Length: 107
Image (tube, rainbow, N blue to C red):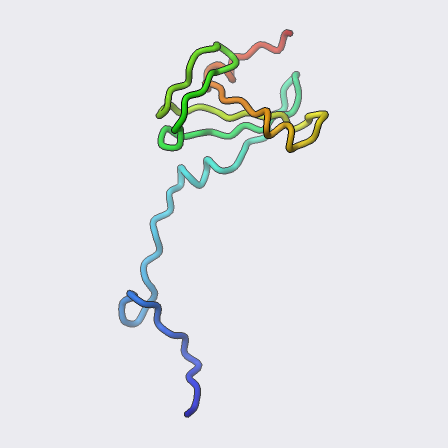
């Protein structure tokens, strides 16, 4: 019996075409990429956490107040850490957006 060169239909697809692709969640896709920020206190990676993805409670290092679950905020870690990228990622901190944008560079 000769083989067919036509691809097989996926289960559950309509006749004559592939199933409709799932709708892309642009907010979730954009949240996955960290933004690189250069500041007087070093190079930072900043990733935005959306309301839907904020599932735990954190303490903001800028104001020392709680970031409750369901509140959009930022996750920040150093890019130029002396101990390497793995250590910097382990030392990441969750900031309020306002606290990160108005932080002081004095120590």
